[in-house]
Amino acid sequence: MRILGIDPGSRITGYGVIVKEGNRLVHVDNGAIFTDAAKDFPLRLQRIYRGLSEVIERYRPDVAALENIFFAKNVQSALKLGQARGAAIVAAVNAGLPVHEYSALQVKQAVVGHGKSAKIQVQQMLKVLLNLPEVAQEDASDALAVAVCHAHSFSLNALRRHAG
Amino acid sequence: MRILGIDPGSRITGYGVIVKEGNRLVHVDNGAIFTDAAKDFPLRLQRIYRGLSEVIERYRPDVAALENIFFAKNVQSALKLGQARGAAIVAAVNAGLPVHEYSALQVKQAVVGHGKSAKIQVQQMLKVLLNLPEVAQEDASDALAVAVCHAHSFSLNALRRHAG
Image (cartoon, rainbow over all chains, first blue to last red; front, side, top):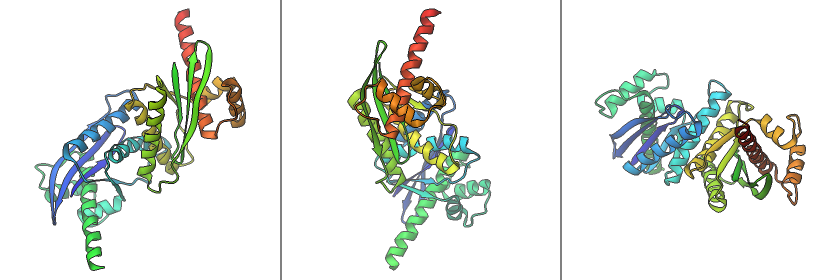
């Protein structure tokens, strides 16, 4: 199963692609789409959409995973983040991918084993877990983390199905 | 010039298409895309994207106009609204339309002549202005209003250019 993790943002959108082969997780690619250069907000949204559509075209993932968001600094940043998120999700569903959402707590627990880890711990654990040459860029790292979280939940659900 | 007005929302997205011919405004169509039936939020966003893409395909507008949003009840509704808005804007820019944004004040002033009008006044004025058979559905009406606002701003800008 190929999993695309996405961490949408109005300035930087991270992505990470991993493959789950049995119990092994294999890193395929990770990166960030920078949209700062577009002054016009609608064009930023288009860059997110196009950038992710290209990633999906290139790696043909089976599923997309995002962290769900319930908090933001204020209404202003929630509106901006929401729009970036909308562009990202539409890119995934338009490509036929099911979209799964996980809480920040679920993501941290999946990667580090508990929910109270600092960002740098998550990044370093991902480096080990996915055998990365170096710690991934911050937003790409968040995207990889939610992809790993989906891989784990999928195994758990499969285990539950076998047990049940 | 054909103008598509959009009023995005996570449950209902209104749209309105008008043509500006010289100083005349002609109503082409208006309607609402209901997304409530989709339980899954990503599928709601896809319905917004697809619904608007179909409207654009059918009427081939030259430009899209939306009200800009700076307020929301809370961070939660801002995130939902933002995502709906992101899906709508991406539908417009992916179809090659320039996207213009206007404040609620600008929209009311363009339709009713002042910024303190009630929603029903705006709806009734649109009925007269565009010679509608009946008052449009609420979200479709908001979409028509921002289309009219764009038509007026466009005339003003053209006048200023001639004067300058």
